[in-house]
Length: 172
Image (cartoon, rainbow, N blue to C red):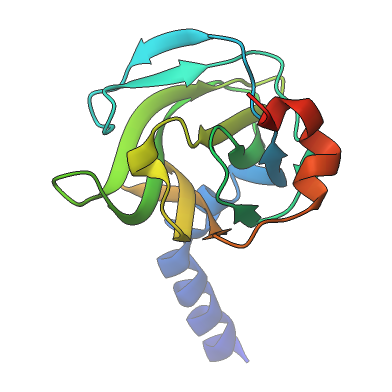
C-alpha cells in the first residue's frame, strides 16, 4: 500500500507543473456576435495579420455555439474568468486555415485578464482575406503554458437563425 501511495504521489508531482495551469482560466461560454458598427479602440498587435486588434467594450454573445457561419463582420469568441484574484497578462492565440499572401496560420496578441470580472475575447471577419472556412482555435497562454483552447468550426453554410437574431445589421 505504501508503495502505491508513493507511486501515486510521484505521478501527481510530475503532473503538478502542468495540471494547475489549466485550472487558472475557466471557460464561461462560447458564442457568436452580430456585426457591430462601433469603431472601438485599435491596439497595436504586431503578431496579427492586420497589425492591430479592435477592442469593443460591453460585448455580449447574441447566439451560443461553436459552429460559425461565414458572414462578413460576424464575430465569434469565448468568455473566460480567472480562478484566482490576480490580473494576468496573457497571450491570445488565434489559429486558423492559411490566410493572406504568406499563408499565416497563427496570430497572437497580448491582453490582460481582469481578476474581478469575466473577459470576452472575439474574432470578427473584418477583411475579405479572413473569410476562411475550417477549424479556428481561440487559445489563451501564459508564456509556454497553454491555459485554455477552444475550437470553432467556421462553415460556408448559412444559418437562418442569424437573420432572426442580427436582422438589419446584415443588410449594411
